[in-house]
Length: 555
Length: 83
Image (cartoon, rainbow over all chains, first blue to last red; front, side, top):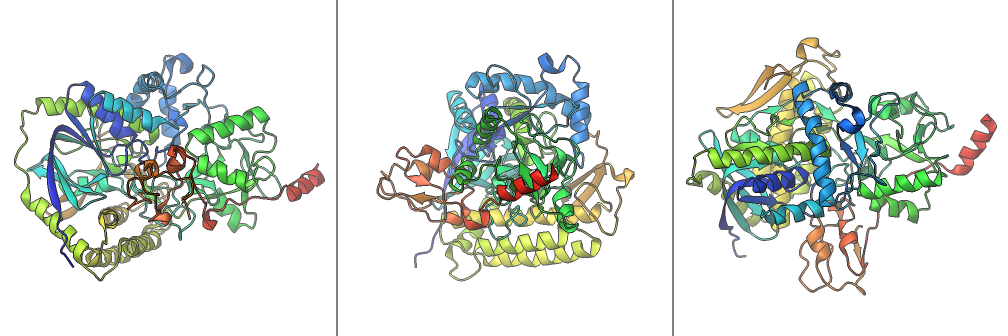
């Protein structure tokens, strides 16, 4: 058999955006507007990639014309809704204050942010409290944002995923990309790099169907590449130990729950929460925003399952709900409901928690300008929890600052780090040329088992230590033995190697946080310790994990 | 398993192959009927269905993802007895 070797090509640019989701495209467009030469490296196709691929329908915002001139009540409401708080008031205030500008931009670009000429608030809110999520029609958002980036002169390179940052001392100078369809490395040389690779999915078993790995709420191709790369390059990550899970229909995880307009009821039709008794697009049922364990608690107490019941919803409101679900990118679900003759007004849909999948809320620590702890490295979007609005706002701000940095850093594109490139190349060629060994899926499933059993819904020092030992064994076996029969499988292997690094950081950080906070539940420290209402930073120093506690007001 | 390509009507334009973020159509050739190489990596985002100019791509939702529901007859009876 002919030995497979990786070809190389070099791409030079001012600003490299790694990941062309909402944050990456917003960053790229803004950096280009500011005069930078910009390249987006995207593992799929920016028109349909990331968690916003075929739509979203909620946008977190502050609109002075609706909310009044004082932003503080909305800042308060936002902070109340945060679990395992990560962001200080200043960051949240900036987010909210810049959201109107982004809404106006998107509306002008062709993403309808109003419904029948006005803003419509809905979901993620409690009756009587301020509402700060508008519904918007996002089904074409990625196509529109891609068109806008191209109009501004951004170069988009699809089907190239980046797996390693290039550094020179403490400065980021580029990245190594791998073509997902042919045996080729793409070496990017850049003055500024923006990481926007999304969340870290596929670390844990899929949301509600452990045997069906890609049935996840957020994109299963967003696998923590940015977090892993940033960590290896020396950047600080934050609160990796605090997980999130979501709720939605059994078992179509992609759908989420906030767009459903019904009331959550028990089998006898009694509402399970205190907030709503009638269906509405305005609130849906916010009980799960406050009480995610309700599904498990009903099950344990012999009262399950719990149903999303849209009975009583008017035709007009029902059509509107379907419209928002369509714009959320849930046409697959709507077609399924139609094929199965499931009208949720007649047939209440079973809902559940997606508690297998505890993806990290924490991630790369970036400030209000998108800056990380490394010179020349910026991050945006779900590299640290933020959702659509966070991705759009902080992508925009990071693009502006990265362009400024690229222009004023005074650095010219330097020599590339051949050792780093050759090491990755050797590992890749070994995977491509081995004939016997585990494929990526074996390693991914094994990782998910280790993560769920040792740093899942229950954690303790003994579990975490055992998990860390198991993960290190898996990492060694994976590095030495994975096989990839084609470039597609090679990229899945590289994704899993990144997931292994991210998993290790979660295990280490979860051991360090000796308390229970949010869904970080330590059976050996079953209370929330006010002294630990802090950021837990994790970073690499001299080849070792280092952790450090910092005030949430740290900038 | 999703997606399913209608070989009678597919014109081999490659739109689905370009659109899929998971690259489930990996290995499809230009101007040939799209092949589904990695069906269990589908996220059910529907991008492939939405871009197909000849409506030749459909998602077949796998059984483990089947949406569950409560029969209305049961509900109605219980509701009316409560009332």
